[in-house]
Amino acid sequence: MAWAARFGVYIGALVAGSIALAGYGNFDPETWIFDLHPFNVQDAVLTGAAMIGNGLAAVAAWRGWRGKA
Image (spheres, rainbow, N blue to C red):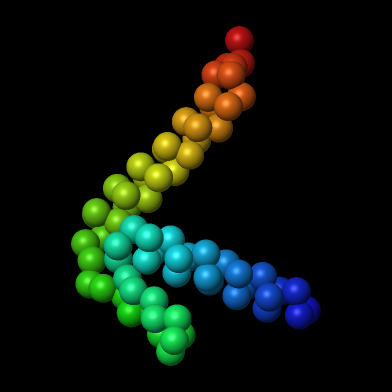
């Protein structure tokens, strides 16, 4: 059961880091406080879709653009 809590902390850190990287929040490592900025949901969804799309395109390019025939 301890692995589930540890996994949750890692996923939370990944989400917080991604939000901060996208510019929607700030993390202060001295106080361990994460401040989420007010944001437009539409912009956040479009940014996430672009990041996921670019990641999938990179995987497709790495695999040689093979498709099912």
